[in-house]
Amino acid sequence: MARHIHNAGLDSRSARLKFKDDNIHRQSLGGKLSIGWARGKNGAGRWIARRYLGDEKYTTETIGEADDLADANGDTVLNFDQAQIKARKWSSDVEEKERIAALGPAVTVRIAAHEYLNERSASRDVRSKMNHLLADKALAETKLAALTVDALKQWRASLLDKKWRAGLIERKMTEASARRIVNDVRACLNAAAERHGHKLPPAIREVIRNGLAVPKGSDVDNAREKQILTDADIKRVIDAAEKIDGEKGWGGDLYLMVLVLAATGARFSQVTRLRVADLDVEHGRLMMPPSRKGSRKKEKSAVAVPILDDVLDPLKRAVAGRRGHEPLLLRPHWRRAPGGKFGILEIYARERWGEAHTLKEPWAAIVERAGLKKGTVAYSLRHSSITRSLRKGLPTQLVAKIHDTSVGMLERYYSRFISDALDDLARAALIPLVTAPVAPLRVVER
Image (cartoon, rainbow, N blue to C red; front, side):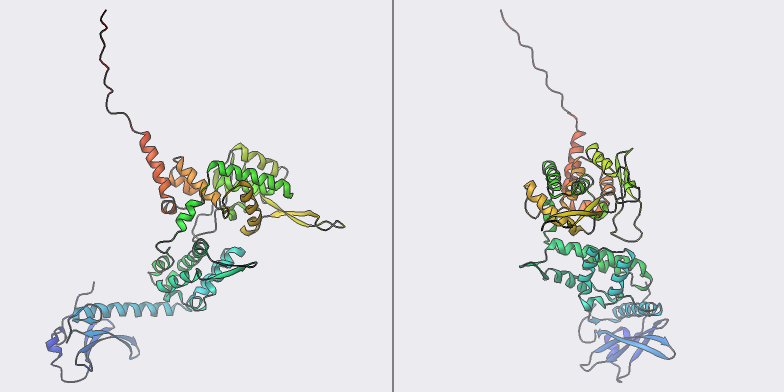
């Protein structure tokens, strides 16, 4: 910390008030920085910081009122020592802006969004989420270096005011939907902070974290817990998927998709990227590709997810004779049969699954057939897999690795299940400490 400079004329209010002229009385603080005092209209002085820019040019800033008539409060009214601290902070900010300006054109939120989409060959779902960010034109044109917590909070809050029309019904965005959008936007801005860190202030990550934090009182966590299915519910889902698959002519594709989602707890976007070669028959596992969430430095190696024979066997039949680079899971595409009657369809191709919305319609039919609560989402299979693993006492590091998430996320959203598992483990280690009393012998008289 820089030492305070003493100046008999500026240190005390009585000395300052003796100045008879209206000149700025200056004191060097070292280097290019100086601080000055000038008399104000009401008799009290004001502190003026000045920084030398070179070529006989300066930049100045009034940093507060001097404590000539009012006591110093460290904010708007400053004594000489406090004024020095504030002047040095201002000078440091000016120097940082000069450094960033020398590095070239500033990076805006819009540039960060386009870089994020281009780097990840983003899906339509991710592009849709970025459009929610870019729709706020003022925020989109904001320089990352000038991004504030308040600006991000206001944008996040605005998401819940948005509406869209589904048929004849107008719907408002739910907190859960807003949360999914915010998650991708956070990943986008963090990636930009990593890529352009040399152009950004050190506090940029803290601004992103605090600006996009979940508001207090959010019911997202409760909604997540309500989407956890029992083992019996999951079996009913799989049975319903098999029946609907047969009735609608999916050729086993719908059943296999639901089966793999339930068995692995992976995200839909991960499962759709599985290749035939990712099925490790010998070791009974799937080599699950990592998600595309998070920063670019995220490990890109696949994670081994064990599966049992009831999942392995139908997958073995599905990949028989196919090449290793082909998609493991396919879905049919229908067209009207040539020369057929109206309404008769035939499968003309089987290709890789597309966006998550392609599962929405068949999943709704599965939920209804399985007798689950309306609105149960396919992501419930992931929540259920995570909670089941934690309840079985698996280490959180292993659960996080298998499900391609972090221990921090597990502790934040599944802490109750972690506590229950730890309690069961701790209870298993207990032993009786008190010897059972020996019952006295009874004497039977004859």
